[in-house]
Length: 101
Image 1 (cartoon, rainbow, N blue to C red):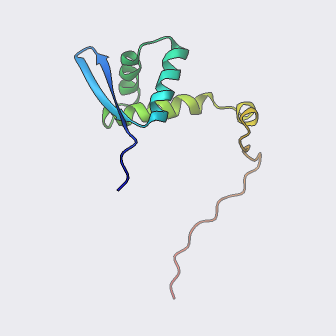
Image 2: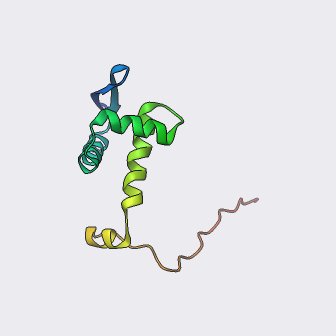
Image 3: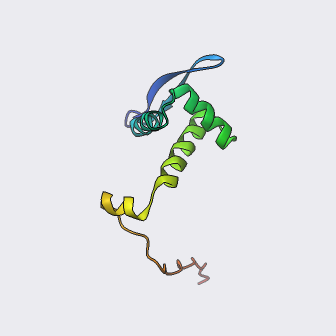
């Protein structure tokens, strides 16, 4: 089994110090959000827990970071990043049909 990529990081919350194990990319995303919003990491975690509400702290933080960047994503932003663009009239996805042989 390959070693875990998760990185343990400490955060300071109202109740004291806590730790979370997250992927390096998630830590980078949290750092960028903190920089953009001019808030400390502890405040970001509190916002994530309030916004997401269910699940554990690390899950709330992951969902919050994903939602933050999804809300900021635009077709122009995707184009400048070299991503594919969403078709204007997307075809419906085929439904999987159970086969009975």
